[in-house]
Image 1: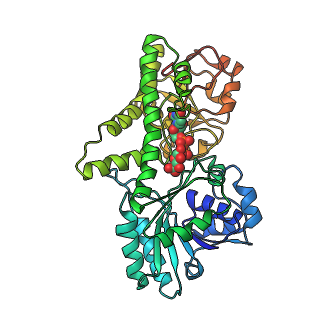
Image 2 (image 1 turned 180 degrees about the horizontal axis):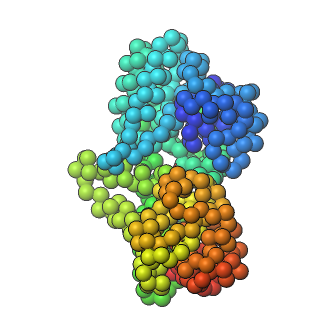
Image 3 (image 1 turned 45 degrees about the vertical axis):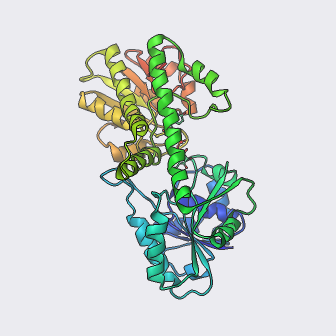
Length: 422
Ligand code: UGA
């Protein structure tokens, strides 16, 4: 099939590359010319395991990046993969969805035949029907030759290629059977249950999936906080709990809370959406509140152990929002470092990949080239990311002035470490 993907960000690039691997002819539209050039040369603009090899195999062959919309009329399927960042009031900002829809509409003016416009971006229920469809229709000036689909993505950073190629399920919401039937073909070759729904149900499935996973984490954190008071290891508890197939063992790891570009933004958008329709989201509010409080518990525990933080050197090990990524967006290390700074501590930070991205968020702390450098003469150490290599840290802790080690993620093998909720 001939497919256009609008937006060469995280989801757009991974999807375009994986669709080319499935044998489709893919036209990736990205406004940033630097990204376009890099992609056409086979260089991924993000770090993602397995992406580069597939991109190298298809760039310049059946995958081309461009900054214009000229390839749109030739595409049977056009996927919208632009960002929906969090607006000031917590809702989803749909500006880029509206402008992509307008550009697609204009590009389709000259086209003949049937096209499917599919939204892959995470959007509030009703967006495809009430924003994308009327905008595309208005600017294209066409009658019934365009069908609409909503196809949520469930890609985890770091595992996005694997998640794309081996999905648990593929959700296709459609305005009409014909649109959904044609769209199904973009995934032919993948083995996964296909779930056909309405447009709005597909939009809601995405928010609900992320909100449910975030709820599992906040639930585990609350149980962890109770367990800590009782002197029980929450990891032993959740291991026993997760063996129940109705619960499953995933996303039960207690710690400093969830971060990243998706969970915080999507839970907030769902809270906003609930309030908009007159529903008080009691559980979702609690999920957010627990997540906001967890990092502050690290600071309280730290103060209990070392007293006043003024002038103390505190090593913060792990800055990425999770391991195997250089992404520090909404990392739990951010509120922790901000509070350390507010209390007058000298922060020495280290991450295997995310020093650079964190330095754009918090520039005025010391960034170290190794864990040893951060730990040298430190009064305490806070571990914020589950990097596997941190489990090997041992003698490095001997460099500290005081051996106070607090984990926000369960990763160290060092016996002197105390967990935030274990
Ligand atoms: C998440 C979802 O897992 C994907 O399915 C979804 O497609 C994606 O958001 C999205 O909406 O685009 P991602 O943000 O890459 O993926 O990260 P996760 O692996 O889900 O982790 C999110 C946060 O939860 C991290 O800070 C992680 O450390 C934390 N977490 C995860 C825990 O604190 N405990 C756990 O047990 C699991």
